[in-house]
Image (cartoon, rainbow, N blue to C red):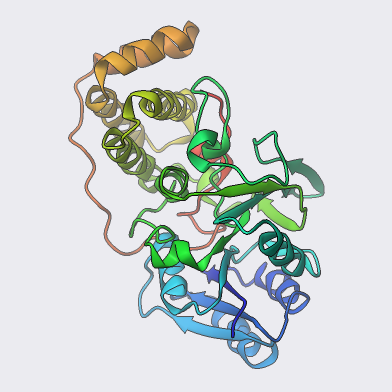
Length: 351
C-alpha cells in the first residue's frame, strides 16, 4: 500500500528542477510515490522529468497536452494519488533528506486530518524561517477555531499547500482539489475551505521545506494581468464563507484579509503594466462593492489610517464587473508567471 503521495507540478524550471528532484530521491521510500506533473513545459524540464521517472524510486510522470496552470496541475496529481497521505511540493523548491519520513510519523502519531509545518524561505543566499501562525504546537486542534481572531494573522493567512501533509479522507471528501484555472492565490479558497470543513489539524515545527523566492520570472516580478486572479480567488472565499453556519463570526476575517490584499496590490501599483493597473483599480472597486457593506464598514473603521482611506476612495470609483474564470495558458510552477508567492497575494499580511 502507498503510504504517501507527493504531487509536484513543473513548468519550465530546468534551472531549479534538479535540486527538487535530488531532494525527492533523498526522501524516497518503498511506500512513497512522487507524482511529477509536467504542465506542458517548453524548455529542458521534460527531459529531466523523464530521467527522474526512470531513476527515482516511486516517481510517476504525468503530462499535460497544454499548459493548464498550477491549480489544475495539482488536481491532475491528486486524481492519480494512491497514498494514505498526500503532500505537495512546487517544482523549484526542495526538501531536507528524510523530511517526509518525519512528517508522516508526526501525522500518524497525532492522527488528525492534516498537519501544517514551518518552512525556510530562500532568497539568493539569504534564508529565513517562517512559522505557522498557530501558538499551540503538536496538539490536535479544531481548524475552524484557528481562523480567528479577525484582527490578527492566523492559520488561514499561511496558505501554502506544500507546508503540510493531508490525510486521504480529505481527498475523498473533495477538500483537497483546487479551483481550476486560478493563476495566483489558488491556495486561498483552498485553505479557507480546509479550515471550515476539516475536523482536526495540528501545527508542528518540522523544518525541511525550502521555498525559493525572488526568481526573476515569478509572478511577483511580473506586473501583468495574471496577478488579478487574486480577485476571483478572494471572491470565492467571501461567497463560500457567507454560506457558512458561522458566517457572522468568520466574514469579518475574510473581508479584512481581502481588504489587506487589495491595499497591498494597489499600494504597489507602479509595478503593473498601465492597462493592468487600470483594471486593478476598477476590479478592486467592484470587489469592495460586492463585499457585505456592513462588514466592510467595520473592517475599514478597524483598519484606519492610509489603508482605509485608500480603500474608501477605491469603493467610490466606477467598478468593473466580477472577473470571469481564466482559460488555459496559465503556468504551473512557482517560477512561472502564474505562481503563488507571499508578495503576490500577501498571504501573511495581518488584516
